[in-house]
Length: 426
Image (cartoon, rainbow, N blue to C red; front, side, top):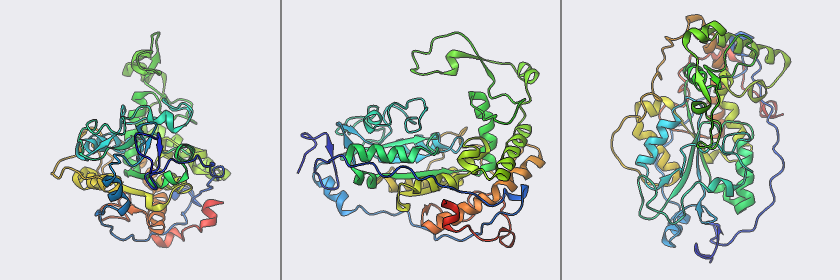
């Protein structure tokens, strides 16, 4: 059997040096559509189905016990570096940063290396290079560096990535191909994915102000909107390694912003929903073709279906945002369970109160009419999400599998039936 010292590319399934296997067939485009955009353009064809309450208890597999007994310190090792096996597929303003802080502080052996979010797997992202696993693991510790994690373990180190930029169409295919090229296709069976999902109305509100402040608000279709409160200035960004607004821009005052553009949340939502109606009328796929950010970034069901093109339902699980903010220890137990690690048992609150705030059902920062429009827009997609998770047997942690988005849903008699598989995927 190969050892960690005499091989760079080791499979923990067999312990042998692996051969590079061919890539899978090219990504098959998933054609997905809800027949109507909620109450904007008629009733959607979805229904609700309850999912069973799942346990968070996970026993070590015989393979994991064997790995530990043989002194293998990490589920996957490549070029002497920890290769991440846990991916938290976050969405912008879903609490990914807070969940990361709590996870690395409480889960033994868990590390995200040099960065919380690596921004690596989506082409054009800030740290994207060539999409290889070699490029990814460069920023992770050595496979034998058991002291590197915040909560160090005596016998294992587990790589993870908590990134809100992973819900893009190209990401799951890029991950799959990189691991298959480097370690063989079987290595992909070692990967696990977790989504933390937030009520889409609240997420959209939080996204708007954060994106506007950061300079990447989706303003397609809004001729008088501002995509940013920042303007260019002359500077050098070399110390950051990529363009960064804090060194390359300066922020406009409120008066300057309002003098140049209409940047209210309510106006912006109207333009986003007008865009959605136009896409619906033209038969354009709502995600990602109509959009993959803004209001479209909360169409979670399509993003999860996209991952299922490459990975098994047993490799995917969901942590509701409300579960995390109300009972952080249960969410961290879920992260430990998925990663195959132990965690520090104690009661604590979600780490980052700014990230985890405004997670209730009140939408005080928007007009009541705007709230109503968004609730009606998202209702059929939320129902489609619940149905798909139950149909696929994807784990949803907590006691609520059918209303954890906390947005009112349409009556089932008005919703019709859930689209057949060939309708969703053709």
